[in-house]
Amino acid sequence: MLKSCKYCGRIHSNKFDCGKKPKRNKEPTKINKFRWSRKWRKNRNRIVERDQYLCQICKESNQYTYDALEVHHIVPLEEDYDLRLDDDNLITLCVTHHKAADRGEISREHLRSLLDTPPRL
Image 1 (cartoon, rainbow, N blue to C red):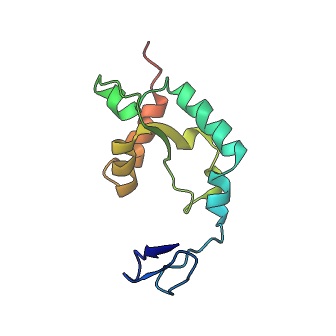
Image 2: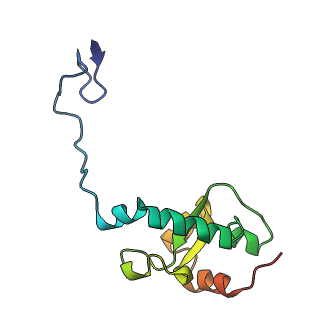
């Protein structure tokens, strides 16, 4: 079957390698292997449950975001891999606040202070 190639713009068989398609590096890193692990998924679910299925930054300002939650490593895996499953290093954030925390717009001290506060019911 002939198709228009989205990489080179020519028309050729979909089984033909035009050489323009970017090659993927499929070699998994230590961090990616961890993120794919059952141990991480289980721990991540436990942290979200601990944080009452709410973004902790939103909750602080009485907004309750429970969609698109992610678990954030306060100290990134690249800095200290040994803290990867430490409950005191993990916090539930919405996508927006997770990206802000990754950029450093939300301080690590502030995130840690949210872990120290008792849950509000």
